[in-house]
Image (cartoon, rainbow, N blue to C red; front, side, top):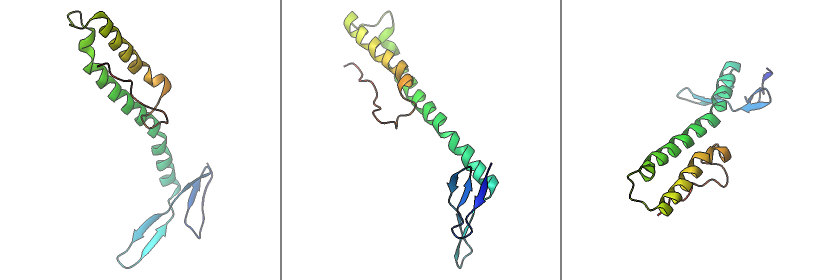
Length: 116
């Protein structure tokens, strides 16, 4: 891993990624301090977990929506066959959403429309 610090700007670079310096105030003046190599590694590792966290959030909300519509698929549901089929289509779209999207923040993302 290549680590360096610009002595003028205090910007640290690790593997080509720049990390802004920390601001430290001693009560009188503000000083900028470059991040250490270990601190840069920490933020690099932390940043790497973001996609997994976004996917986990998407799945959590998706699972909640599926649970809220479980009643539509029970044998004793009062829904007509055509309404039940609408709910099957909705639930399938929910189950398949992670095949297309990995985050609710992706361009074009929207939840499937719940049947009325």
